[in-house]
Amino acid sequence: MGETKRMTVSQALVEFLAHQWTVDGDIRERTVPGMFGIFGHGNVAGIGQALKQFNVEQPDLMPYYQARNEQAMVHQAVGYARMHRRRGTYASAASVGPGAANMLTAAALATTNRLPALLLPSDTFATRVADPVLQQLEQPWDIGLTVNDAFRPLSKFFDRVQRPEQLYSIALAAMRVLTDPAETGAVTIALPEDVQAEALDVPVEFLQDREWHIRRPVPERGPLARAVAAIRGAKNPFIVAGGGVIYSAAEDQLRALVDATGIPVGTSQAGGGVLNWDHPQNLGGVGATGTLAANRLAAEADVIIGIGTRYSDFTTASRTAFQNPDVVFVNVNIASFDAYKHGSQLPLVADAREALSELAIELEGFEISREYTERIAREKAGWDAAVDAAFEASGRALPGQPEIIGAVQSKSAPQDVVVQAAGSLPGDLHKLWRVRDPLGYHVEYAFSCMGYEIAGGLGAKRGLLADGDDRDVIVMVGDGSYLMLNTELVTAVAEGIKLIVVLIQNHGYASIGHLSETVGSERFGTWYREYDGEARNFQGEKILPVDLAMNARSYGLDVIEIEPGASAIDDLKSAVAQAKASNKSTFIHINSDPLVYAPDGAGWWDVPVPAVSTLESTHRAREVYLTQQASQKPLVG
Ligand SMILES: Cc1ncc(C[n+]2csc(CCOP(=O)(O)OP(=O)(O)O)c2C)c(N)n1
Ligand SMILES: [Mg+2]
Image 1: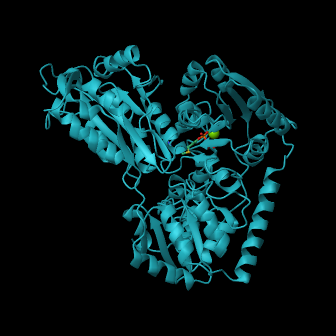
Image 2: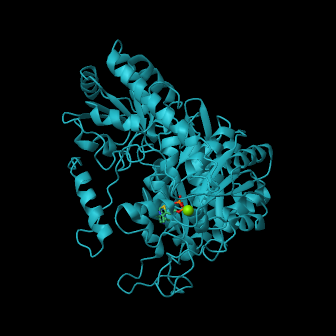
Image 3: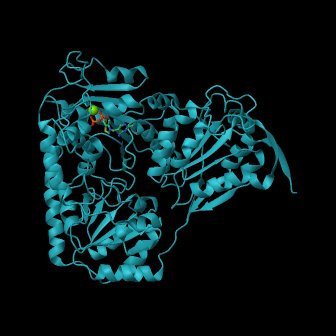
């Protein structure tokens, strides 16, 4: 046996993680540049001691960061990973039981978004000598089961270090999945608290620098030839670009292809930024929250070229977006699961950048017709005018969300990053936000998790700062999401990390309220109002005395409150400019009218309406639902 070092499992794991490097072409960076930890029993001694020891001996080895909630640790890791195009992410260490369980939501978010996050939940004793310990889940039918088993369905990799010697194989397998573009997501290593503190003789080889080269598989020749033949035979092809284009850093290759061929592009939420908003071929968002321009052309297209998209129901408008009866799908995706969606017979299982380069070569000389080009220009101009109109200040005391977005957009710099996740903002941003940078549009809409906004935004800012990039992160957040998880503002203050937060106060759920109305449930439970004891609901007039500006001020942020009135939009513009000029975090509070909507993009979202009901509103909604459902294409693939 070669040289060894006597250390605990935790010390070995931390030192191992510090020596992992992701390599992508010329870029080489730490795969795990730091670790979050909220300590309790389970990790205060094991991982906590290891971090302390390294903090004393080699402070740069594994920087430690605090968070206020375990869920928010993982959101930050995901925000960072997205800004680094999946090359790096943080580890998140939690104590046993509730600390670990708090990470479940965020694990699902990472996996759903195909973004890497390394989770280190502590487990109860492997020896079970002191069972049941504080916070241990006891299941009489399986005594070995712990809270951490709930990570299994949420993780792309899960294992538990039951014996110290297992660390090597588990750590290596975890890193492979974390850095594999087709498999990445939540990677969970459960660490029993006794094992964390046990010693072993670690081969020095395990602790040396190790490189993980991002795989970029090229398309196979046969599938490529078939895809090219289909595209060459197309009259009106249409590209659906997703997050895979950005993670693969394939924007230049996409632009080259559409410049040469004229094929128009619609983007998913994760694909926002693949082309500048004003590129003539960029029709903006496609699907349920898409633009009229993209949705009209997607509906008629004979060949859909999906690139790095999961084809979520929002992207496909619940399988109503592609109405050409003869439509075929060419799907470029590194994950075969996605490449075969829509029953595609033309899958290209490949890296987006490699596939786009090959397609550009093979499609040389192919161009869409003049007629189609003119149609694209017309539809785009029509939508651009609709956005201009939506951005115009209305002068009403309570501005609508579209004009608020317009004001924020007008004062943000082209490279600034807008962060959002849930509520009515993702849909409005998808339609309206004019993306001017590949990383400028950060809307988490795979899991659409309320509470991601501030934590994810902080992670995104960390990602920028790690590269010495000082552009602003602008978190736009609704009152509902804010109330669900806002405490990472304290973390931002503690580390002096600058965020700009625009809080849109509309006293409830504009999004689900509108949805509730369209499905016949009359906004039940979607307002934040004083409880009406007689009616036994929260539907009354009395809004709550909650003051979220004061809340943010209490955390130590600079706060700007926009007073309702004719000048609210101008005041908002000045506030954003002031926030940008500051080097501290600023919280901008604005009241908004939840009943003002963005222009219609003719997208549909399938949300089932009850088949029988005693309510007239539900009957009416059911009738509309059945008509819309009729255009849904049956599930194939
Ligand atoms: C954790 C979580 N719970 C529930 C939902 C369902 N949901 C989506 S949007 C929304 C309301 C969001 O309210 P707010 O942040 O105020 O935004 P608004 O709709 O007013 O724009 C809810 C409850 C969700 N997306 N995430
Ligand atoms: Mg709201």
